Image (cartoon, rainbow, N blue to C red):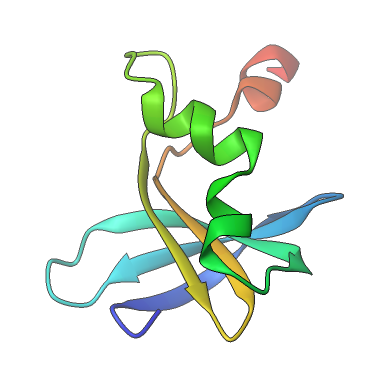
Length: 92
């Protein structure tokens, strides 16, 4: 996680919270999801359905998973950042 700085909170859900982050070396904005549950091995983290699905998916309408980080038993998903989400678009 030392490659990223966190800027502000974007949302909080049942399984994790999402923050807006910025990659230090490129300045690229990303969404970082921090999982609430602890993961004690890399294998345990990589066997999650969410990880398996997102690694295989490559579609214009699906947010791209850029990186999976496990640090101090905390799992982080780094996604491309989008200004809006589907809920906001439907609500508007």
